[in-house]
Image (cartoon, rainbow, N blue to C red; front, side, top):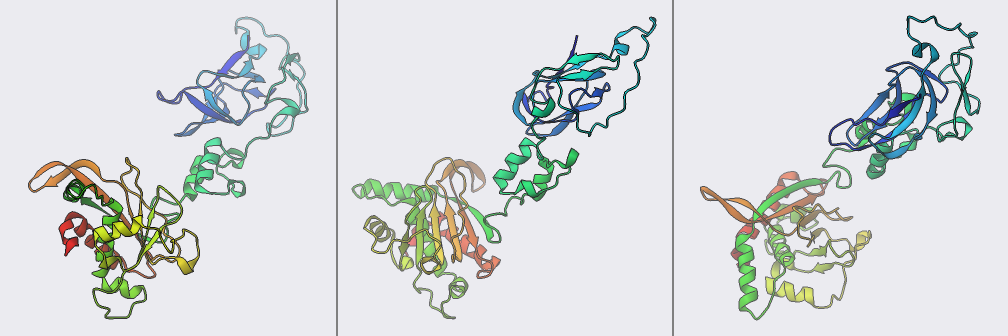
Amino acid sequence: MPIEIRMPQPAPDIDEADLIDWLVEPGAEIALGEPIVEIETDKSTLEVEAPAAGILCEITVASGSLGVPVGTVLGLIEARAEDSVPESEPRPPAAPALPATPPSATRPATNRAESSTGGSLPLPDSPGSGASAPPVPRSTALARRLAERAGIEIDRMRGSGSHGRVTRADIERKTPPPGTGPLEPYLRLEADCQASALLRILASIEENSGGTRIPLEVVILRATALGLRNAPEIAQASGAEAGAPRDASVDIALLNAGTPGEGRRIREANRKGLAALSAELEAPDPEPETTGDSESDAAEFVVIHLDIPGVNRHWPVPRPGAHVTVGSAPPRRQPVAQGESVGVGDVLTLTLCADPSKIEAAAAARLLVGIRRFIERPLEMAL
């Protein structure tokens, strides 16, 4: 009776795996414990060993099959006659020796495999037998998925796996580490702001002013404008004359990441209060700030707000020509330090991307600290 080769369970929490490649061909003689199948999970790549010696008489799951459940029969092994006869009984005469065929040699298309006794074993047509066998993939299934996500051209790679296959490890070696990629080579900084006081003030304004609402992104815009006003080194880097006064005009583009499309360029944002900024954003825009790649309409300072609850931080991709890009997401409730004790408060995370060719890291850090100060001390924005 043929012996079944089943998909193993590499770990208790794994119930399926990808069958990457058969390491032997139908009709080949295999030894007990010989690696015959290569499989891959989300965690590792490993080889399945032959559960018995004999001839691989059938492949029931083809190379490249994804999501094969644990316990599935992958193929069948026909035990050799000499292994099935007890040692106390005389063995049948050996059949004339056949020329050895290298494992890598191409076998003729046939549906029968010769056994060591000179007989033949019927081999049904299967995905991995004869001329109908699919080509062996040059990369593992997991490697292909990772390469697609990372934008890597896997077809041009030579891998470290058997027969030069590209594996998960090969892709991970070529994948940029966290913190690089689309934002590289921008400086990246982030800061958590305690926003409970700010949110109470905004709620009070809405309650006591007949429904007038100040959006959070307007507050972040105002805080960024005042932070830039107090950062003359950044103003000079943007092309302003050296020694520019603190109240020099600051123009900022405001975009909402949740609704891609046109943004809004706010002129002299540092000279307008929260109510004026809110009214300007609600009015029709005479000159929409597009999100195209034209450098002529790209603002040097950009604020991009992601108004989707449940996201802790938002790293926007800097637009062409932008010297500083500030990103924000909705505040979240979490433990915060309150003097000598710990309580629950509202935390708003700000991110900042700066062009290092225009802005020094120290200047960008001081700017982010200044914006944070205005968020945590909102009454200072009224001065």
